[in-house]
Length: 253
Image (cartoon, rainbow, N blue to C red; front, side, top):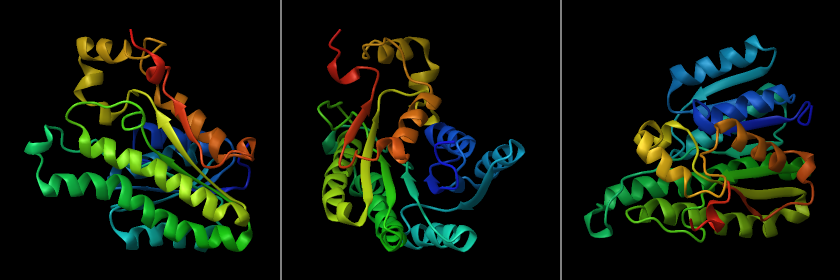
C-alpha cells in the first residue's frame, strides 16, 4: 500500500493513463479526487474503484479553467482535509499540421490545455502542500519536444517541452517546503489520444518500431511509473523529466 491514506488529485482520469493511474493509486490506498471533461466516463471510473473497495470522488470540468483547478483542490480538502499528490495528466494532441497551416486558435487551445492548465494546477495544489510541509506534484509531458521532434506537432511539442521547464523551476522553488515536482515522459501508449495510430495495424507497427522494445505501452505500465514518482519510493527525486518510453528516445532502427 504505497499510497495508504494519501490524498491525490488525478486529471484526465476518464480514460487512458489517467484511468489506469486512478485504479492503481486506489489499489495502493490513495483517496482520490478525479477530474476530466467527460463526466459519464469519469463516473464509471469512480464506480469501478468503489466496487473494488477504493475511495474516489469525481468532479467534471475543463482544466483550461482556473476555477476548475481550484475546485478540485477544494473538494480534496473538504473531503479529506489535505492534499498529498497532484497527478496533472490531462492533455490533448491538438491540431496537427505544418506551422503555416495552424491557426492561432488551434495553437492556443493546445498550449492552454497542456501547459497553462499546469500553471493553474500548481497554483492551487501547492498552498495546502506547503502548509503541511510535504507533497508530490506530477505532470504528464512527452518524449515529443524532449530530444525528439515530429513534423506537424509543433504546438504539442512546445507545450510538452514547456512542462519540463515548469517542473525544473517549481522543483527548485518548492524543495525547501518538502514538495517534489516531476515530469513523466511516456512513449507511445495505447490510449484514446493515440487514435487511429493505435487502431490501424500498419500505423501501430510503425510506432512500435520507433521503440527499443518494439511495442507500444499499455496505460497500466505508465501508471506504474507515475506511482513511483508520486510515492515515497521517489523521496529524493525532484525536478526530473523521467522517461517511460520503451527506449524510444535512444532507438534509431
